[in-house]
Amino acid sequence: MPLMSTSTGTKNRKLHAALLIGMLLVFLLVYNRRGISEWLNPSPPEASFTPGARRAANTWNRIHADSCLRIVRNGDLVLRSGGDAISSLFKKANTRDKTYSHAGLVFIENGVPMVYHCTGTSKDPEALLRRDSLSAFISPLDNTGYAIYRFQATGRQLEKLQDVCVRYFKEQRKFDPYFDLSTDSSLYCTEFVYKAVIEAFGDEKFFQTTRMGRFSFVSVDNLFIGRKRRLVCKIGYIQ
Image 1 (cartoon, one colour):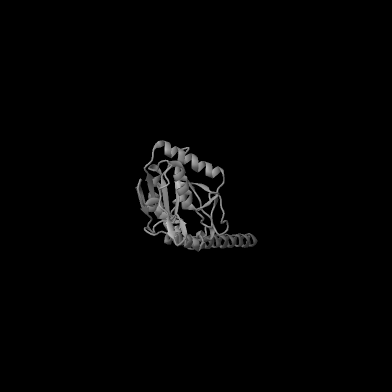
Image 2 (cartoon, helix red, strand yellow; image 1 turned 90 degrees about the vertical axis):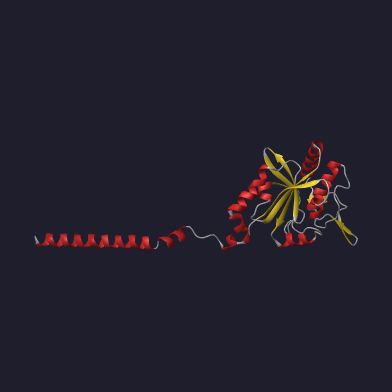
């Protein structure tokens, strides 16, 4: 009998110890649930809190970035205001309105607004002419705002403009890092719009150019300031 009582007491002590340890573990888990959650789901890197990320996370910005998708038409001119240092340089090249830094032409393809545009980077200064979704082109992640302008043109002119843009795209025209308006094999962003529209519309005077000394070029504001074009929408993202 004494042996059985000792054995039972040992088992009870072990059971109590196990229960105590279990309760401590539960307490530690509950008390440190926030730390454990952060360990299992670490916060995104600091880069996620950049101005671009804040713009992209803003509900108002997301709604107004999507709002233009329903109103654009074939041949519309889309302008955007980039938030980086290179964009700032392009804005300074404008002589009348320094809001925008890049431009492209919109066409609805398979129900989706697509933008044809030329852009280069430091890693790829002679990148090929691009065809991106309008949503990506005006994303608040990379831009501080955008605008849509509509040219006064006939249906046939707009059809021809789309044909010209598609042809340039298939020919893999490159970005022109030298900004030489006299060459056609490579085109900088505003030159692409300038030459595509003039070829399609047959109007050499549709756009003005900007001249600095002996250098003549197409600035972004040359594209949207002038006759036969009107503003459709203009959005400045909340920063």
